[in-house]
Length: 221
Image (tube, rainbow, N blue to C red; front, side, top):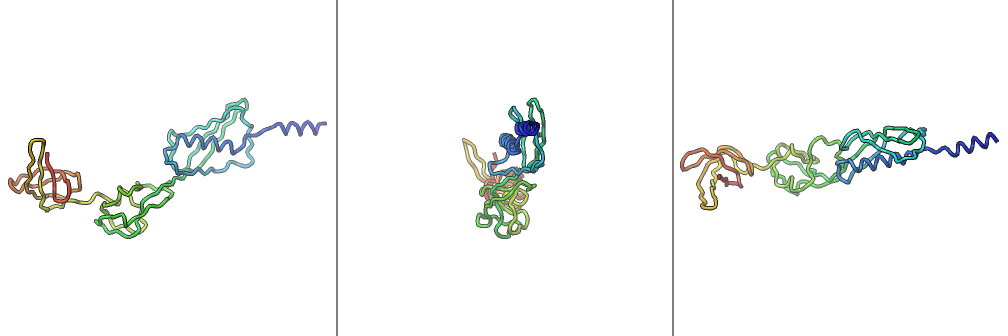
């Protein structure tokens, strides 16, 4: 009889499954992550011997930060039922994106074309620098240094190409709703599109500030 009572008592004792704990963490991360949809969550397994009483209330997962980022994170899972308990669950968030990578070497100052790079899905969780995902971000940009095959294209290794170089003859354009005039000028410094540079008016000899529009053309207001 005693053996039967012990067996029944043991059978009635229920424990919280580890899978249910992982699931509440996944749900919380999905709401708080600032990552794109293509990411994985890999849990650091809980001790297989860990047995927590089954919670009779919905589990609550609390993140230590407001926004979840890639890398290792820790989430507190609480049970607020009569038999209270709490546990920290650790996981690694791995983020994947299609990024742009050089398919051939590029020299410093060279204008990069779409034929020189390709798109590939990569784990970007540990990349410490910005990277490009759109062709428009890279195409027709200028390499700021020699770049080897396989280089991940980023802000630090490309820039807007120089459209006007120091010493170039340029056309200075000035216009408004009432008139439009042009005059010859001499660039006193290098400039990329949209940059304001010093230009010498060849007629008056005056130095003025003008905005680079395209190769050989600057404008003033």
